[in-house]
Image (cartoon, rainbow, N blue to C red; front, side, top):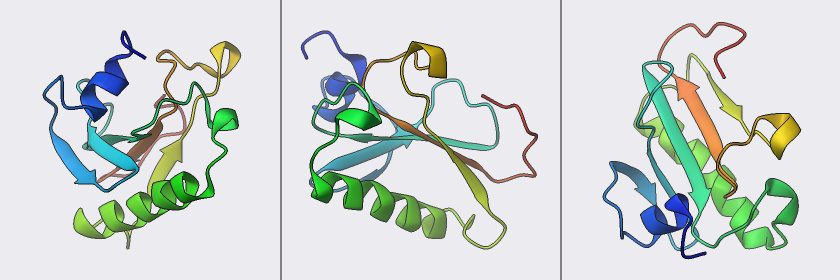
Length: 112
């Protein structure tokens, strides 16, 4: 999608602080972090929501990214949170499927 900010980040049309990348997925630091570690993990291909992903390779790579980022940023031992807001009632603001990865500190119940 030409006007999607996350597509522009995935296509490197907009500079972002990338923390992970493979063929199907890219992860970057959130511009407005809610906690010490706040990354967004997105598929490079545009999917409006998690319900639209029909490619098992993309789903596998999303979970691979979670595992590798957790190890890289040393949050695999103490824990972290993964959040996906789906559609308007779920709080999704950008209509490009994305996971929030939060960690690096003891998390409260309502961060996002």
